[in-house]
Image 1 (cartoon, one colour):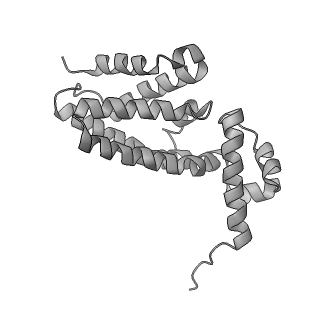
Image 2 (image 1 turned 60 degrees about the horizontal axis):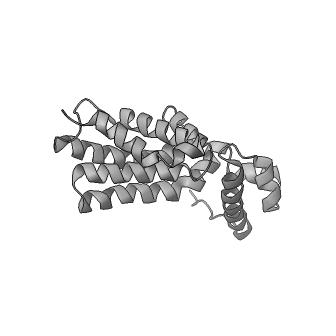
Length: 187
């Protein structure tokens, strides 16, 4: 059996260009950005785009994978530096701030929690990291034991969605996170 060949240089270049252009277009248009615009600006055809990224979710997953990896690593760093509740608070703040980088990303992330999409696969590592911070805060007695990772991400996703939709509320993001954590605190 032969080893799979590495992608050709032009294919690697096209993928890199597509990701660079996608970052720009998604920043301008949001998570539902036109794939046709991405291909056109990258100077490739739709077939080339689809050969690299069969779906929008696959493109978003590739675009966001490094960001999610950094967020997962950040959870571990915060756990090493801060007490449990402070680490969880700081991480949730960074998570909600990061989801507003691309307009409309928060609902896409929330929808990816179910199913088997490429976007879900790229989210799993940071969700697990957030779950570890939650478990640590529960073990310290700071957070109620009946809260699970799904609850935490639904609430944080709600804040991210609201902040994404309203510039007025964007300034209140940290306060909204504090209010959520107030409701999750052990009595």
